[in-house]
Length: 157
Image (tube, rainbow, N blue to C red; front, side, top):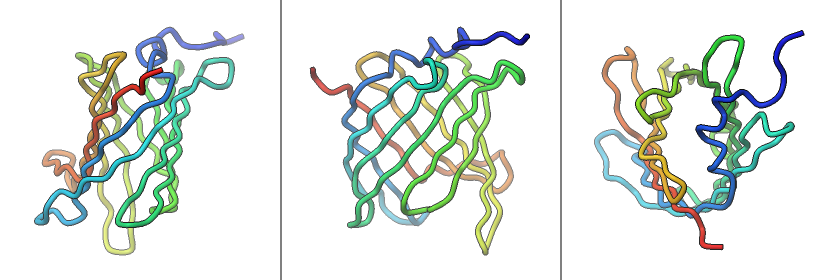
């Protein structure tokens, strides 16, 4: 029988459980300006504390922005896995990667009618009080352009 329960690696992010204020900057056009938006996020451990679930509520381009993510460590592939869905993109994005030097980096592939491209999501400067997050895109997995970045600050209890 395979090992069960929360992988020990999950302790690297389990302390994120709780409520967060988020200041996000979005750059819809690579040549355009950054646009600031705010929101809130709640992280909670689910499925016997084996997966970290995220709910996000905010606004994007003048409309409600609702998102849901799941983050876990796959003990069979020795990789971190992350999924993300929201009401604007209306897709399920899947990413996989590693936690190295205090930074979690996961990469996935997205398809639109115009292009296929890669998305890299990074969590860094992670502490119990705050952390930073950035979403970057690339066509070759070598040159990355940020299109979203955020600072999460734990809400006061």
